[in-house]
Length: 436
Image (tube, rainbow, N blue to C red; front, side, top):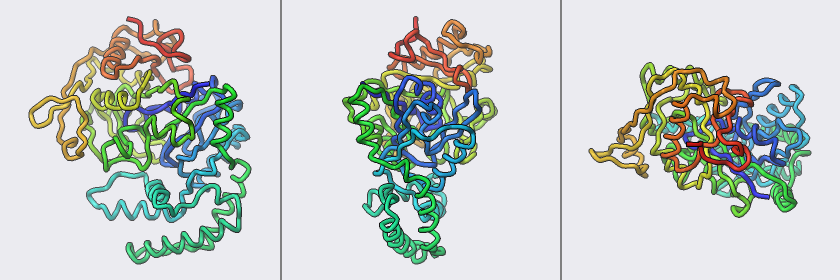
C-alpha cells in the first residue's frame, strides 16, 4: 500500500503532530524521519495534552507501529524520560521500534552546540542547543555513535570512551571548556540502553515488509522545509533534510511507495530562532497572533516570531516537495481580524519577484508585497463541517490554494482532535479541493 508524507510547509511548528495523530487511526505504522529532541509536537486528546519530542505521534494509537527512523538523532536519556512519562499516563509503548541506524546524541553534543552558538556571537543561528547539529556533523564525518552500538555493552564501552576522548580534546584545547568524565558518560548511556534495547531493531526491514503486505504508512517529518539544509534559508537552517525527499531517506521508504504528500501550513507564519522572515510583525498585531496561537516552543518554551502568511515561501515549499494536498492549521487564530494580509510577492531592489532568494543577505532585504483578504470575525472553533465555516474563512483558504497550487482539504480550528475540519467528504482519505 502507498505511504503518506506529513510535512510542514513553513519554518516548523505547523501542527504536524496533530494531523499525524488524526490520521494514525487509518494507518498501520507511523515513521519519524528526521530531527531529534529539538522538535516538538503537541497533540490534544480526550486523555489530555501530550508534548512529544522524539516519539512518533502514532504512539497514541495502540494499534499503530511507531518507528524512530534512521534519519533521526536520538538522545537516549531524553527518549527514556519521554517513554516513562507516557507509560505513567497509561500509554502503551509496546509498538515502538527504534532503527539501529539512527545516530546517538552524545552528552558532549549539547555542550558543543552551546559553545558553537556562543562562538558565533552576533551570528547565532538560534539552535535549541540540544546537540542535534553536532550529532549530525559527527554522522557525516563518520565518527558518530549509532543506536546499533547500544545493543552490545562491551562494544558500547569501547566506542564511547574513544569518542569522549576525541571530543574532550576539542572541548579543552579549542574552547577551553571542562572535559567530560568518560566513566559517567558510559554509565549514563548504559543505563538508558538497558531500557531501550527491547525496542531496537531492523526498523527498515519491518517497514518494508509491512508496506509489501499492504499496510499503510505515515511518514512524519520534523521541523519545516524552510529550515531544510539544502533548500531553506541557509545558514539559518536545521541539520537534516526536512523535505519530502528527505522524509523517504530518513524513514527508509522508497519514493515509489509515496502517493500522497500533505503539506501542513499555519494560517499565518511563525519562526523560531534567527534568520529571514519577511512577513514578521513587530507590533500589536504580531503579539495578538502570538497570544491567540499560544506561540511558544514545545521543546524550548521560547516565544515564536509571528507574521502574516508568506505566500512566496509557501509556494516555494509546495512546488519542490510535490505537495498533493494541504492542511491549514490554527485558522481560528485569525477569527478577530477585520482584514488579513497575505504576501503575494517580494520586492527586492525595487522589483517584484515571486522567487525565494538563495543568498541569505538578499532574503534579509526583501519586502513583502501584500494582498488584502477580508476577515470573518466569527468564532470558528465549533466548526465540524465545511458548511459550519463562514464564507470569508473559506474565501481565505481558497486564496491560499491559489498560492500553493494544491487543494486545501482540511482546516484546523482548535487544538482538539475533533477540531480538524474536512473540507470535502473524502478529505481524510483521498484529498480534494474546496468546493467553489
